[in-house]
Image 1 (cartoon, rainbow, N blue to C red):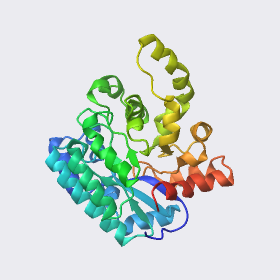
Image 2 (cartoon, rainbow, N blue to C red):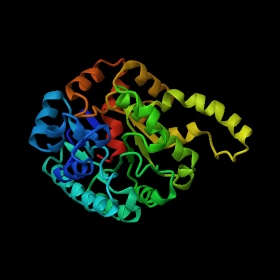
Image 3 (cartoon, rainbow, N blue to C red):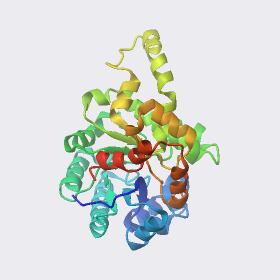
Length: 328
């Protein structure tokens, strides 16, 4: 295990490799949109840099360590064979980048849910051979979520390897896309959070955490609004189960969330949502993230420094929790 540089750890920091960019561009027909992910934005040079340029930016901005993850939609828009091949290539490139700067980077493995059994093998290779620190899942795959049992071999592998699954947003699945994506200007700030928060609640409702009691999840953007709503969800859950006659879960939804989920700030370094997350979950369940390069890293570091936190909270959220969760 590498000795990472002490100081601020930022846990949701995107990167890309040219081959994934090329395949995303090909299936977009050369006309990128919000559904294409970051290839539609001005971030590409920064995404492709997991070397000296990124480290220099980290030095300038006061970030000691970044946890790198393949930016959405990752490999999840591809056919299974292409997704598996590009996952392997992505993980090899990521491991090379981490090895070149072992004190500064950690990494989350890519693995295709649409080829879950082979993806589980690739996750095992990425963790045990390449030394990566977890799994990135860019939300739905072919409009299906991780409550679908066909994806569970990947969750089983993550649990067995004792690594976290980072559940990251992308454009909403077909069933909820229309009403959310129709509001131009609200896609990233609202629709993505609704989509990913719904994804996690579907996992709770399907009994995923009863099936995999040691599975650990990380949600960005301070929990995709769920911490703010947890008491409401728990309050109305027994009523809804009674009205519908459905068999309730063994525990309250909020209990599953608090036991299995850690949240990252991911560009949500604001006092009100930060305090809501700490009050709902505890400071041990919150981590700093800049969401670079989609957000300006220097601005997110400055906003985090200005938050109304105790010295103990700032140390845990800015460094200690991430080192524990990702095994740094």
